[in-house]
Image (tube, rainbow, N blue to C red):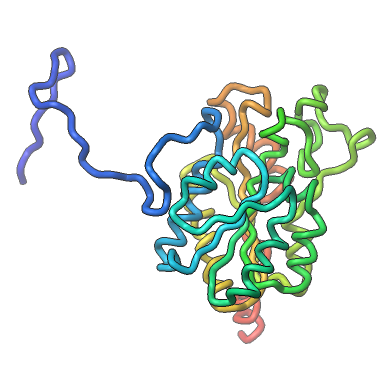
Length: 270
């Protein structure tokens, strides 16, 4: 076996550095994003488009974006992208899917956009069994507008307007949107992942892949909630964000597959 050369670190290299490979995902256009360091949304977006590419659905894919930090990617994806008003992405996606039933339509929304601004939109889309995929990027804050509390903010979480932590008596309890959607008859697949570790990213990728497969099989509404880091909105150091997500958000918004109609059908037949 050929031995690799020893690279000395106490002197300049004799051979200039060069690019070995381009690891930019096929459906994300080259260029840096402008999201905060430590943000978990880029990993979520990369996972989504890589699953679209892996399944060979690129030419049929249409994304519908809500309003939030993630809108940074709306002009940088090599798929068709439509921009919706606050909270209205599921309704716009419904119209697109009904007009172009062979397309693969997925929404991208934050917790403020989906669970505050447009809660009725996603609930009714799921109840009707619309054959679309909704992706929720949940960090528990209105990140784009300064880090205020959202409907998914967990008790005790500090935000711009809950500096002492969310209090149930004053602010109510967090809405566990995946749990609600999983109980609706029209939903075919509901899962909740995260981007705070390599293992969680890998599991989230499988959830996204399964959601797109469910849509392609015309089984009904599919939904993937992804817990993402927002150290800026959480008032913590960037390096602390992954553990903060585990100890706070994921302790309430439990990770895992909440519903899969194909699995349920298989289990009932055994």
